[in-house]
Image 1 (tube, rainbow, N blue to C red):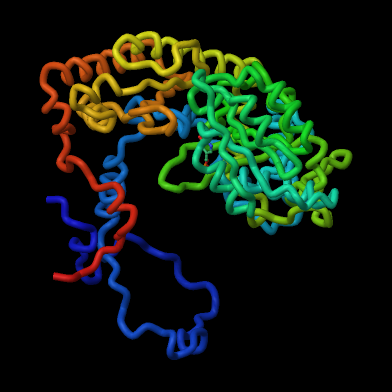
Image 2 (cartoon, protein in one colour; image 1 turned 180 degrees about the horizontal axis):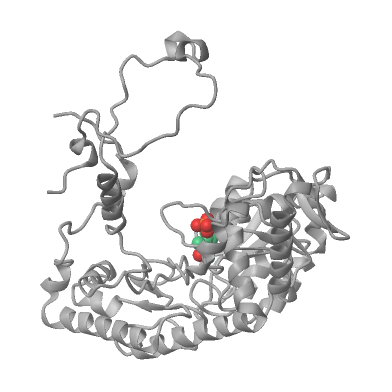
Length: 483
Ligand SMILES: *Cc1c(COP(=O)(O)O)cnc(C)c1O
């Protein structure tokens, strides 16, 4: 029987043994004010070691994850998480290093961060970097704060607008708004690209900059990027690129060469750290010459053979995270980049693009295709045809669970009806892609022949359809002994 851990508790049962105390014992009442000392013992489970490990093992099997199967989410994709990263990230010299250790005693860690920064500068084609931001959205926020600092440093205080295409990831308008800017939406053309005429009409002396994703969230390369760059810089604005998913570009082209002034990447997507559930992430930013004075502090520099910290820079926007950001993620990204090398990174992008196009080609007769052209690392299908027969994209996503697949990203980007955004990633085999395409084709057939089967999916799970909104709004993660 699957009893909760707390229900297995037996008074006095223990699963640990601690070494005897080797420091003077301090009484509670001398260390904590009397009114803050709790009256009752906390209710903690008293259980054996095996019960604890079984409990956590059982929890670990409850979620679908990359080690259990194909995970074709587009945009926020969980990509390759090599196990060797865990070996380097858990080396005691890295994992147990206190963040306050003086630079002369933490040269190895400083060197790793310095060299990771150099790698990212090379991959992005940009001269400045900060590893501090803890997420993609945090990188965006950092970048937009630097945009403001740049304009203010030139006494140009009229620039209050950030232009953002309607295909953007939701975090882009959120970051610009939190940084105090007004968001101006730029409509996409029918071919999914930015409408230059519309951009021209909205770009003026109030424009602080533009936030773009290239390839955009439809998986399409923005071929007019040079024209966009001329327009934005021409009216005094700056160029921000959302590089969360850089695995269509690595080694093939560089945001710096396209004229961007700031770009973040997600180490927890493109550079191989597992993510989900709000776990530690990292969203470093690279910047053009113009923004270097405003980068967060501290900056790590190399002076001869030594790595040093620069802490005082009055023009910096300051710190955006304690210490250096999420160091464990940096170790994983560095391991990944050094294992692959320049050629390997390029091959990664080539394979990501090839896999996406192969899967797209297998599916484009089954689903509606809003943009029938070669894609980059991901592509969008529309479930409109199936919707007319009674099953929505959400129903199809639920039915995929019965075929043992995690669903792709659905209903994003917002500009495509019944969207399915699919990214197969570079590491999946040809056979996996073929099996997945087969499953989607079968489901589409089911929609024609037995729509109820799809509408009532999933059939193979104890819990059928959750009210996602309710779970997020009324989060309840504590156990109470209320009987
Ligand atoms: C994931 C993602 C983000 C946000 O990254 P977080 O680390 O979740 O904040 C921003 N833009 C794009 C395109 C993304 O895929």
